[in-house]
Image (cartoon, rainbow, N blue to C red; front, side):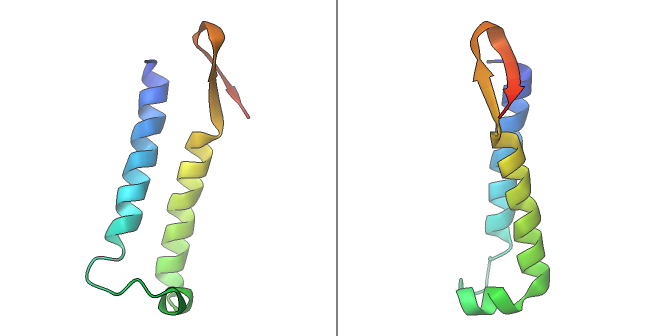
Length: 67
């Protein structure tokens, strides 16, 4: 597997783990989440990282293109 692909997969995994850590010790209540601007913005930021990293497609001859 290409190092760039490994790095993107690591970024996705790390962002998901960080999003999960935002909710340790607090109930996962959507209404409460909507009212908490800091958590909402943090989740949006981490979600954008996963979207960006997953928007690349691995194609033949080991080259990468942006979708």
